[in-house]
Image (tube, rainbow, N blue to C red; front, side, top):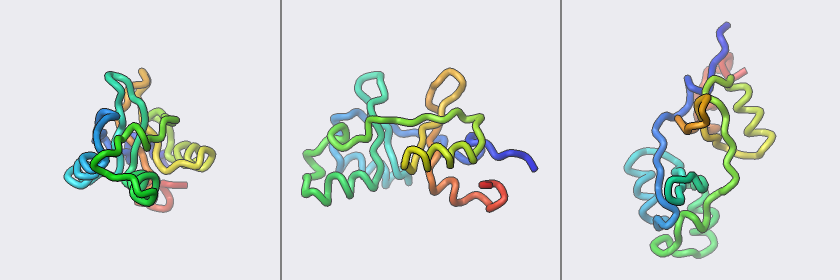
Length: 130
């Protein structure tokens, strides 16, 4: 059986928002584009990742106002990347080892080309995910 690669199951739409974007704007962008995460930037540099869950757990649950709380203030700054040619088994292993639900996907030149999430992997047929 052929090995399933990260590129075959990743989400190719990557949305970038500046770190000074307010959470309500980011949540609206996530809703409008049917995504669960945004890559946070500081100028031309990737500075972090914010998920819909981060907005709820790190901001709303702590009483932080979404109209005046920035993405940068709640972003996960330690980003983990996996190459698009890696197998999904490697992605699962990386997620388990690091305790994360998403990985940035890069090409051989380390340019971001997508995001793979636990839900992307959960949608795979059982034989492909093994």
